[in-house]
Image 1 (spheres, rainbow, N blue to C red):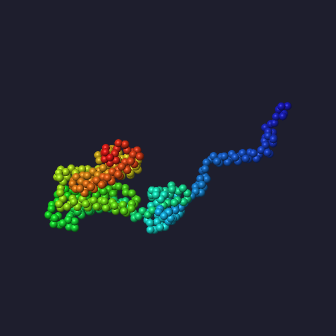
Image 2: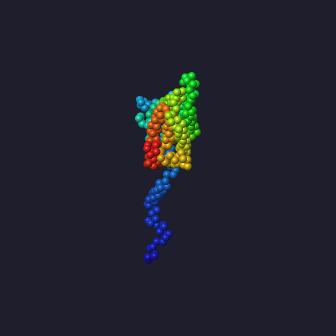
Image 3: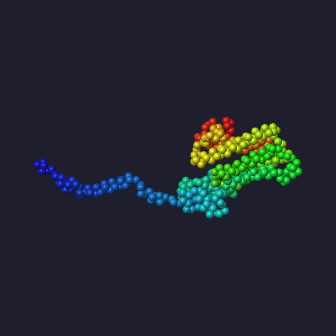
Length: 362
């Protein structure tokens, strides 16, 4: 009797009450749909991503306002997010031809810092519209033009006084008075210094492609050219008095000058090699070259050698104008060296006991 009432396997499959072929069918369909949706959701966004990217902002509008009056100058539209601020300046120049890209200064805030040309527009875009404040930077010149002009002037001006043209000195007095050997030596050293600077500017240093206002170049030229005219006039004057200690003083100063000039060149070459290697974080380490051993004592040895050259030139010629020039150069280079030294300290790429420019002192 027990076996008679036990349903077989075939009967179990055909029994509608057990199989649920009539009522539970919708339930199984919903369950299958739920499982399929869960599978799609857990599979990750592999294919829909390009659709989402196309839905984002593809262009940015740059609204440019005058920094002083806050009035709108123009709107540079259809800028791709991958473009740089230099691209914005070029389009701005097409709209307003009177302003060249080199003299366009753009800021996020009226009194904020100027943005670099390499800044990506995407990094500034909080929405599809960016507001930038424009300032006319004035006439601009390239950095290499600044350096070549500042260094060529003193070279030619000194030679003008050295040859004692009649427009500078009295011809009769110049012909009557013989020159001391230190006058010729000073001319050689002075020309050597500026020829080295010119050659390093052209072939050693990697000059920035940026620009600087024309007024800055005028200030620099006035400083270098003016002081060169001042001390060249006295050194090459027919009544010039030679140094007090004679040839010993001249020889000692000349040797120190040549050592500082050589050291300055090797330090500049080491710094350029560091930048070309792409490792701007590490501090240049001394090499087998003895002129680079000063890296263990100071952070800016190029300024140390530069000041050493002018101090030796002051001792060699024993003239007050050269001493004043060396003093002012020292003050300026100390400021530059301190800024660079603080930057090295922030990056933790120099020892705390290393000084900025003068070993163990400053």
